[in-house]
Image 1 (cartoon, rainbow, N blue to C red):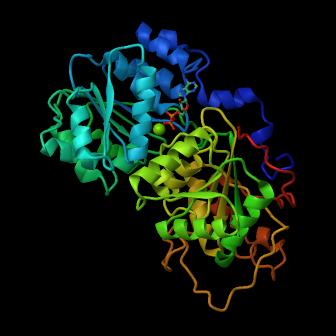
Image 2 (image 1 turned 45 degrees about the vertical axis):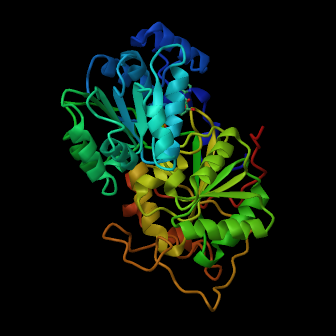
Image 3 (image 1 turned 90 degrees about the vertical axis):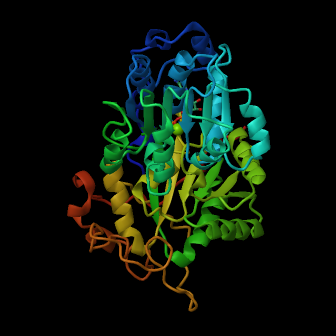
Length: 471
Ligand code: ADP
Ligand code: MG
């Protein structure tokens, strides 16, 4: 992709991107980690620490509780995992408890920490749903030092007396804002209340809103807050655009993008599981090789799909938000928000599935006329304007007679809340009846974060094909 609507990302120097992620002035050797751990780091191919690693690791080794906020794909797992490997006593079972929101993420965290710790004696195991209790119980008898789990199964195993919190010296919440939101909050409270009071705590995420931080602090002792995300929550290596589309044309536009741009490996996010299934069928019928993942699928199938994603052997994955947080697959070149998320934080996590560890990535978001407010809320959160991408090749269809209008999130109609702009710059853009020039006239400058207002029309079309990074 060369002649692109994006003003900056792909043309600025690599050092700028590097500075976004890595701490060039530090080395792993200077962080206070023991030799076997340093060997593991080297064998993983990590040359220098990321910003969050350089700051968080010494603070944890000094015994502090930490609340860490760093961009997606910047090595938060190793930031909390490495000091655990350094500090856990291999003779004490269940010393560290790491909680994550999904089984897939729990496995990934356990795998990465095991790999980093392969030259030491500290052991790691998982406790999560989707696997037989008997199998897990058998493994837990070995008494791994670090347990990575999902909250429900951890509680379950504790109630069955197959796991206990007595030795927990280190507690970690990955994706802390998700772990402390309403769905998990009570489980987390129950779990942390049962852990010894003098433990050390690490909470991390790419997004930590003020409310969540307040709540998080209640579980911590005078935590050091470490924020490395700087002015924007998203990495500069991800080129973000939105595409205006009428809701009835979304499927067609997706098909058009997948066939005309040939992205290397794409995750398409939908809000609802039924949309995931619907889209997978639609694209499958059009002879596109697609895979799907959502929470109603069998665990075996979920694991298989994640494995394919991680080893680069699938091309298009249609996903629910099950896959929006934490999943690390280096080959993901494109993220498409088929349904814009209602929660702006989710946008950050979803597009964070690409452009990881300094790689390049593309994020496209479908925005329907009713969703202008949602997009503006996202821009406000990430502190960036998301430019529009025009696609003149794509011919919008007239509204089908049978079409029932949907709300801004793609579900049933509902009001967008007080922050939603009254003037909507997207109304004109998708209506072929209205000349495109009226779009700029519809911009309400007061609604753009940091006063960034589009002053000229974006380039007419995206040229060329997206280079394939598929191996
Ligand atoms: P985050 O949790 O911040 O989204 P992850 O911990 O999943 O990020 O790490 C993203 C990727 O970067 C992983 O594949 C990980 O192995 C890799 N990684 C972590 N630290 C480094 C480093 N210092 N140098 C190079 N790659 C790293
Ligand atoms: Mg992570």
